[in-house]
Length: 429
Image (cartoon, rainbow, N blue to C red; front, side, top):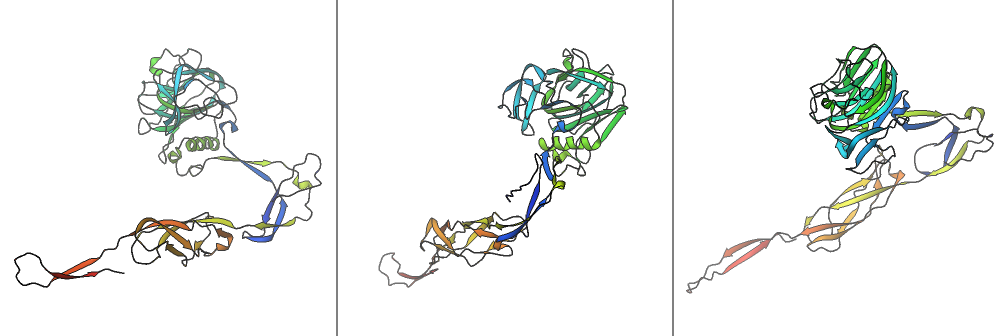
């Protein structure tokens, strides 16, 4: 409803709800206006959580809101964390709009990587990666976190997520690894790892078989550089990655379970992997959203005359008829099937079976015009709808089979083969 509220002081914000006294169609129906809190529902974003240090998103690799064309050569993968920690490629990386689960990805073929800078200290870290890995180098990296031109696997200050001779990707910190191997290569998965100051953990979302493995891990990180698709020391040829990478998110905190589940839900639904979440996961059935109360000044005001009137108009229902061909029967009438669209789920609405459907003439033919009349809505909630039917359809009349029966009446010998007969025909209408 449109409501004009006067008497509001300065920049006070007033929010209201307007509700009819009932849901059914009618004229001059009562509408009740009440002051209420305003809730804003927004989609979850990784930056809603504290500590987002890196965010690379193949759905928006240029951070413009518009994905590039298929086959584009990506030379810079733009960071969406808000800190502009962009990653620069050693050579152009092919952008594939259907690379991972029929969704966008950057294509790595053991010869491409991206480098950038990021400051991460402290003893906590959380990393998420959406990856489709094909058989790669023994220690292929999805993400390397160390210092420029420095190995990432032999110092407690650094770490990486990479392959350890199997189908899985595992976190590796100074030779300590934890990992879960998914069933196969060339399949997209959500890989995760986190460090809480005393232990390192990792998991792969694999439905109800999802499990978490852990190992002792303590001490502060001293990270200044990152690489995607390679070791930060890019001379390590065993670190080159083969496959598709669609998203990487790094937090410099150890996310709580509920926060981690939000990111899991966001990534799984975004990349079509929601079926990989356990059925008990809070976002198994729908992606995460944020509910925000908008601050207002409702408590300082009272509405005068908060009742108005308004109309609820009937909703359009469209009926679509489909002809059922018939065999010629000498009549205009025919039988049709139909579908109704525009009915709100839960309402019961149909059309009366007293409608008429007639051909334009009785004769055999294809795609003949059929006119429908006397179409009337019926059933429990018909009064909330009106019908704007398509009262013309097209249908066939096929030829009718006649069955002859022949009888020989015999003859007197006349030196020819002619045989006199008589017959009858059945099947006429």
